[in-house]
Image (tube, rainbow, N blue to C red):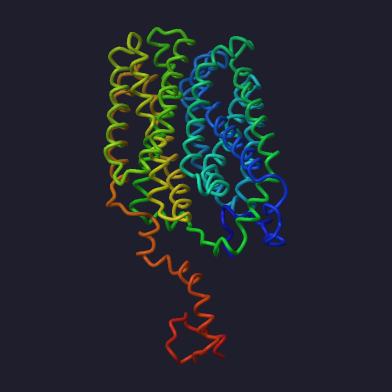
Length: 469
């Protein structure tokens, strides 16, 4: 039996149809508490990531890191997202998405605290733990939104992507001042334990409200369960691979910006604090676009124009960083911030190109797992190239090519000719499992009125030999 992501194993039917509100408490108050939890979770998903880049120079100097380890630090996040993210789907089917998100927040709290240990093993172990926690929440937050706010997916998605940008903006600007205040980059990184604890607390408080909504979602009136689509099946789809490359290339460029832009600016002559403020400008510009882009893109039949335009803005920002990295830094940061709106655009297209809830879940899981593997190449290669050549010109030129390719691939996915993953799999015959679930009541009625013999053609599956005997 397949367990839905949004139907955890403890779910059961309501005791009676007359139960007030389907459970205890005010449903609206419960919804507000769940939404508050989603907002705080989203805000935490970029704090540790975007605070690493501005502190990279301090970490290198304090811990005497070579160029290889320095380049690894921004890449660790992407590697964790690639390998830990797919496990979120399996865990959610077994324990429920809401419960796994709570566990992911606990792991994030632990990882953020361990990052405060002022040595290399603590930094690496804490980053891996925090990365695993973020990876699980990254994959499951869209599932949580669909489960608890099925009628407001677009609005709630816009809210949580906006909070992602706001969290990144705050962390990028506050990283260096926090490090200076607390006497070192390790304690500055550990500071993000407290927002994660707050998110975990609110999410724990929403447990009863989530359980009541899980119970209502599991009622038979909501329809039969939909089969899970394995990642290996999604891997046969051209659309899934195109979406994975679109997601991977935009993630590559985003994590290069978060991990290396402050270093590029600092080595060009900026102070660490000023370089961090430039990074925060990129997130500040992308914050309103994180809400606007999904809102309008979802209403468009064709997203190709938006995808290509964002790629061009991104390329212009990286090009400017080559020729005038300090004097016009804030202008280039603004252009890069516009280009980084490719992230919510790709998330929106995943929802549009999924076709069904199951198709969307499969497309999201595959594009994120494969996409982050693609993205992992970027930050470490960028850093190694820059240090080996003693210049950031070649790495920045490479990123110009990456974001132009990103725009082209995203435009391919955004074409209405691509259809949906669900339709593509249905054409290959996979939907027969869903159709059999829908047809079984009709078949049962037909059998009760006129049961076919094994030799009659009834449209049913062939009877197994053991039953015939």
